[in-house]
Image (cartoon, rainbow, N blue to C red):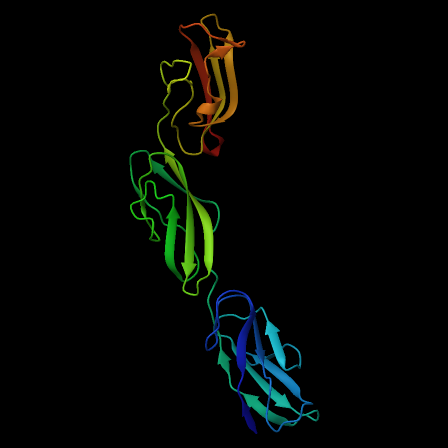
Length: 257
């Protein structure tokens, strides 16, 4: 009986194969030449001792798991075993991934150790921007942002495979509303809701003049969005200086009002 050498290689996917080590999805095992053996043969491919694939010189699969053992037995048409291959044990590493939808909540003025969910054998980390992060090159940086931030996280595994994802850090604080503003081109030219608890929304925002007439209305306004605040105009003209009253209805997390 002959002992044949089984060769395993990636046909599509990421990373490289070395002594049965793969990173990716598609592999192929094959026997290309056997000295002194007729070309009319039956190939029986085995994965963990169970028959898989077609009776062909090439065996391709996408279903291997870590620790699976591949081998092949060659027989004549009458069932006589001519050769048995060596066994190849696969080491399958998962592709890197940064799952979506990860949100961390931090109180304004405090710090938080970010512990994102990441899969894969990661060797390098790159957070961007690095604003508010003590170290943007490690897995779990200490974050102290002054405002809500969305960070991009790029990770690379030992085979050079890359994954990217977004990590949101929500800065939660008390609601702040200015007691005066000056319409025009200066920085304090909008009247809007600042700060607020995490995941809250200004459901209704109304400003009234001294006679109770509404001069501004907005609905479902995100916190800290000055673009939807009152600019001081009413009916196409700048409202006169004076005292105005506002009414704010908040929708907090879990639809609490």
